[in-house]
Amino acid sequence: PVLSENDPLHLVSAAEMEPMPEKKLPFLVKATELAPSFEIAHYLLAHCHEVLFRQRDELSLERARVVVDKYNEVLALNPGNIASLVAKGHIFWLSQQLDK
Image 1 (cartoon, rainbow, N blue to C red):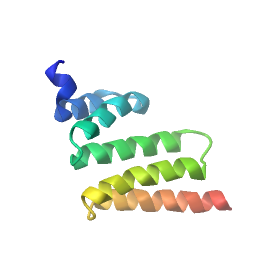
Image 2: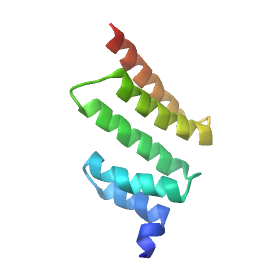
Image 3: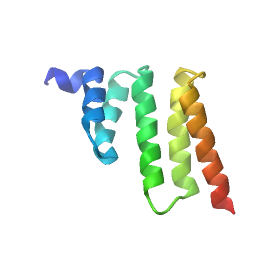
Image 4: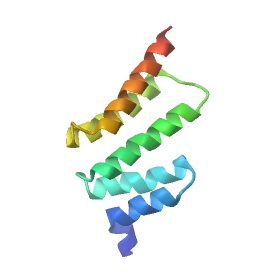
């Protein structure tokens, strides 16, 4: 295998070069698989899921749960990750708006 396919930093860089969130996902998933404690990769993966969640016309509670779970993975690595806490709070707020 090519080194770039097994280097989490390269995979995160490749993801950041992609303009489309759908194309970022495979790079970020692989980076988190190769380096399970790579907090930045986990955060970028969660954020990518959030972008996809918010881009779709249909916001459902089930889809919101996927995004919250991804942010929970980041918070498991670093409970003080403020960006994840804020994003998770915003998703919860959106979810409450869906209940109305």
